[in-house]
Length: 472
Image (cartoon, rainbow, N blue to C red; front, top):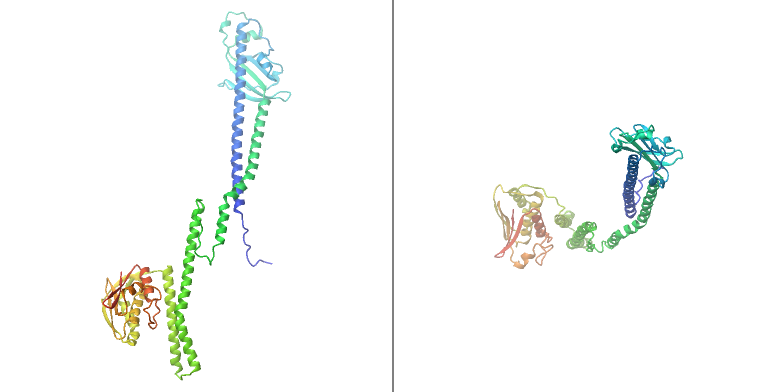
């Protein structure tokens, strides 16, 4: 049967991954170091063995030259120098002008190397008839025999060789000890790597666990943070890798707290503002049910609809104010015709102006345009005009001015004081009485809309008149 959903990926351990990576890295480093050291040690041992072999060959050549100069007797064909007698298995031979002069036993069975014409010596590895591993050198030397020019010469090959100007000396010694030493060093190095690997395999998990301990503490601290503790934050740390993570997590918590506070404030505001219209709606329905008035149902439904419209305006204003303060409302700054917008606002509020018997005096310049968001500018100017209509005394005059550098609305406000002006931009503030459909959010919403568009909103009380001005 086919699976209905993809299997979730298995969780991986950060400690295990870090441990394996560290062990793998150390193994690679130690293995590489072992190989490099092994090559260097083998080369150094081989070079020292070759240097020692070369010294023995040169010493043998010097002895041959010295004995040939000092004696008029034929050089013995088979002769072993005393300094080679205690060196174990060794072979040597000396040929002059291609003729055999002197050699050790069984030397002819060896495959001696031949130096190139431009080389004075050549090294090679050989094996004798017993299977002994040998290291050999063939040395080209020129014995100084001028002191023997008066010595008699015999028919022997040795005496003929004594007059030679060029000789070839071959020396082969047992190489087993050198090879055994190199193998011992290989075993020591390999054992060191294995021992190091075991130590790393044991210590690395412990060290990684200790180094990751702050993460466990961080997880415990995160578990204590929830909706019931929105103001709780993670403690700072001096660990360089964790400090940015903690800072970003605290920033996320701050944004979440702000969102939670906005939601709670919105819910509280809705509950506060809808309490009165809901009570009105409930009272109107209960009164009509208990004591039928006999009114026209259309008129009754219109009253209920007015209460519903009032609640809708309250919720819409609260939502818009919350979105503006949260930065959710996206601004689209463009050239807005302020003159046309002002004319539209006047037409929109004509009914309320007539209901409250207010006079509206207009001073509107033509072709006024600002860079703003058309929706938010409508909210800003519309709420200022609505606030003036809601609070102006019945029968008074409202002055509305629109210019390129200033847009203002002025209404009579005999009950306001300078202290009230400082509080008018607060949510739900009203001057001790209910102003009809006014929610107490008009100026707060207007202030937020002005701030979002980088416009300046000023409230000034002059001689009992409140002037609300907007400047680009």
